[in-house]
Image (tube, protein in one colour):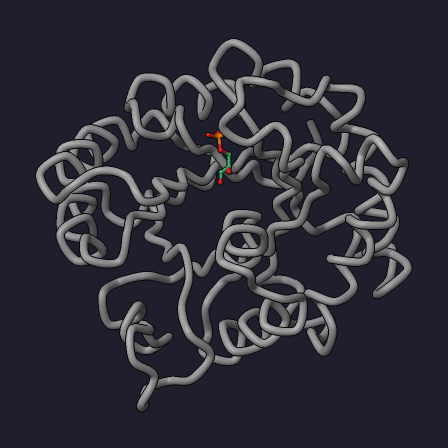
Length: 255
Ligand SMILES: O=C[C@H](O)COP(=O)(O)O
């Protein structure tokens, strides 16, 4: 663990309807005092940003609200999309960009990911940029090339000043929702390469400051070993974020 403030995100993905989302947010808000020293963010589905914001209010800002996606323009004729100003109006201060499900299921390109990173920063949001290799890419020895490539594309045009509002989430695609977690050593190696790439793109000070989350079947039982690694500064949690005790257990392991 480093001097970087640990950051744990709960990506609820396309799960939970209104009552469940409110119940989970309220349960987390009730535990918020236990989260001191860890930055905690939850990413509900779009329709529930406002009720979740309301349910988190008793936490007094100790739990941030994030959006899983947003379109690149403030408003306009883009049927089906949700604008940056809408997610901000709903209470979100964080934008998740480049999740593998958006890259590989929805088909977002590196160019669109970069557009979203830049637009989110321009709008004043903090941005979590997710990157990570597929199993096929890992097995063909391309892990570092994929990660540094997605990183470079994603950060193109991001200024050194804006890097203060960027968090990187390394999520090996083969570990997401599969129960297969990267070993702490493998994850550390990938995080170290990503940090070196940030140093190459910017400078060592920015690389030392940027936080890199691990995502992929992180649970209370494996979080401690992962988070103990030098370059792992937190987690982006899917399945385990849907259960308040599991999510709180991971937050506790991040301290
Ligand atoms: O955004 C979260 C990641 O995709 C990890 O999901 P998971 O914890 O269910 O594997």
